[in-house]
Length: 252
Image 1: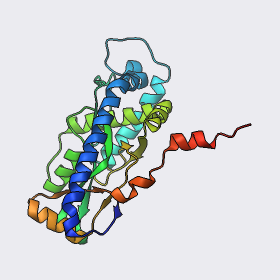
Image 2: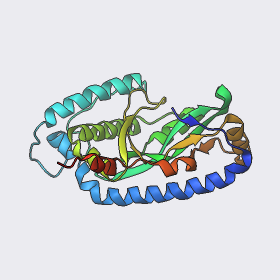
Image 3: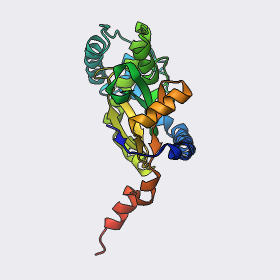
Image 4: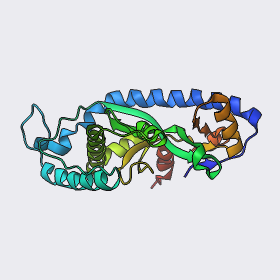
């Protein structure tokens, strides 16, 4: 749940400008890291011969991985999307192209469902294999009552479940991101049931201002969306887990 912090309207402009600049820098850093780390995310390491590929060698554990993913896929497609589907083998090849986009959620201003907006985080990003459907589009579809294409949902579910499985099977990837000062968490959204999303979290914290500020900003922009603000007051007290671990090493 996002933290709420009260501010004055005149603080909004400077805080938004500072947040956007810092968020852009963090996102640029993340994209640079991902270019280097992409080979670690090869989906065939999870699906092996159960995925279309030019490579035919079997992968140890692929059968168990596919079975587990298939069970989750059927459950989420049925209960989360009301679109019962199942996987056939081999599944379509997943291209090892990684993307990030801001973590988003729906927020009813003042608890009024008729004033529901999309709120984005400047410090958290969804990591995914590139696909035609993502969380941002799901939220938009929810607000606008758009009907989703079955093939798009299938691709999203499979890609998400494979990525989460890979991170669980290779925990060293999480450790590597933590050393780069970005932690990995698995999150769920109110618009997609139990579907897991891989979220990259920066060390900076963000907050949502009080509802009257959000309402004023969205009315002025004419858009049903808002971006949280980075908490500049907390930047002086940022923790560095790596240096803390080094400091905890005791001299003999």
